[in-house]
Image 1 (tube, one colour):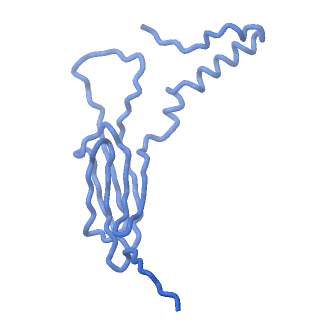
Image 2: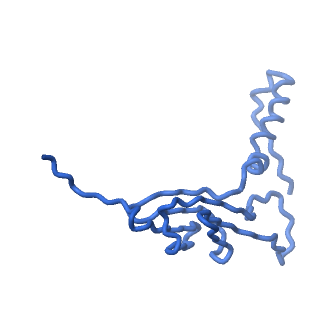
Image 3: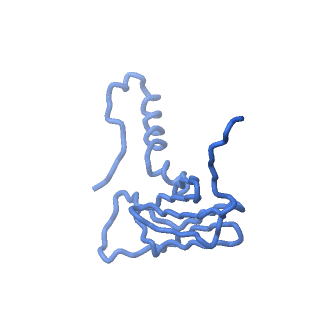
Length: 148
């Protein structure tokens, strides 16, 4: 089986050579094979803050919690995954292969108000969640202020 990408719409033939020329470039530059390879394969992150914690979430589906390494050096939180290519026991010839689990490193600078001793992490449903508690003096305090 051979996969060929082309535009089967014959209504554009009236433009002559330019149509065929444009179709070739459209099929090359709009193909996911090229566009996906031009984008870095680093998981997207959400960073948020609540009253007592900072929260970091990394979208990393298809991994196991054992694949992650989380290190803290001074105030730099490093999250890394190092995967090696695994040989399949079943010999197959792929026509198209889009699954891509590669190694990556993401680093985040923690604020001085972070309590690095209480950092906790969990991996659930493809999302790595890291909770970083705030130091007591940095926690958001709210109170009602009376107007005189």
